[in-house]
Image (cartoon, rainbow, N blue to C red; front, side, top):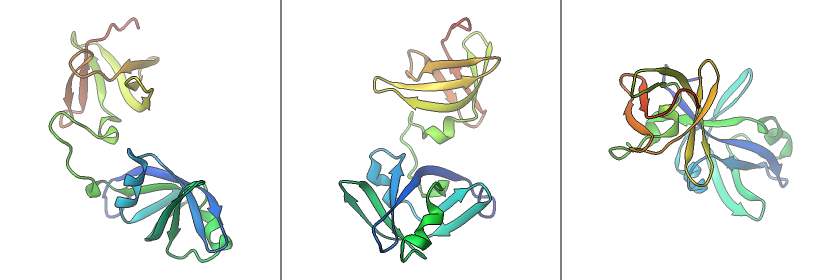
Length: 170
């Protein structure tokens, strides 16, 4: 995915068509969910398909977040977008505060313990309510709570690693 090598981040998904004027229902992965509307342009991506679309209008309804995209004037023109992920250029996000990271920046980092034992790579993050959880894939999958200072001791984006205080047996 990408334009001239620019990294894109998935921020939502088109989940359905709404009404007769080409509106689509959107699931947002951003917090809060309306932040999705701040990021432009949208790159709609599905296997074998990647197309940039401008967001013309948006609104909330009891059905959730609705969007009207360029090129969509009726359900027939909107239907092919259902199922597409919504990606935006990484550069549209504001720089995080010191000690804060975007989830997308943590995916791919190598996870090692304080003792230097390699546990694997961050493949995903889960929102559990109590705290976020790192999904680490190595010789097996591990779920490690994202608790700065308690569990996560160092995030080295430049070095591509995350240092945790974690028993490799867990």
